[in-house]
Image (tube, rainbow, N blue to C red; front, side):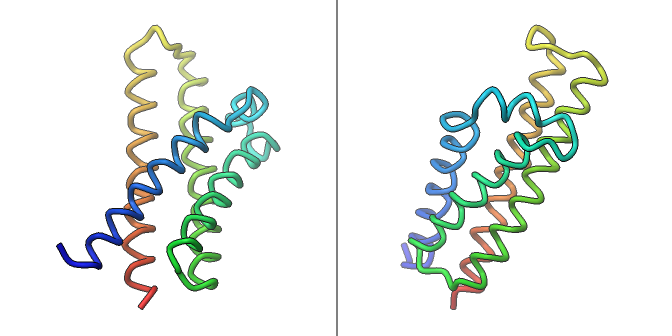
Length: 129
């Protein structure tokens, strides 16, 4: 396996660990409650934590500062809007964890976050040279 492929796989693994930390270990009730209200500080803080964790991961990976800044800011904006959109969709339909469509929405949300990380890893690899 080439060094480039190993680096890419490690970076994707890092994004997986980062996502676990940002979405589950570090998320507070304040953040959860604010995700469905546009501009709420809780949702903004949650997205900023994701961007900060990604910036740290990319820095450890040796990615250039400008690339880190661009990717982290893009992630903050995208992560915020994905979460906000999911929460709005769930609230408009009054869906709860007892309903299958709740879990479908959560799964779609998580899938879109994972696609974000794949894109960020690919961009970091392509721009890091």
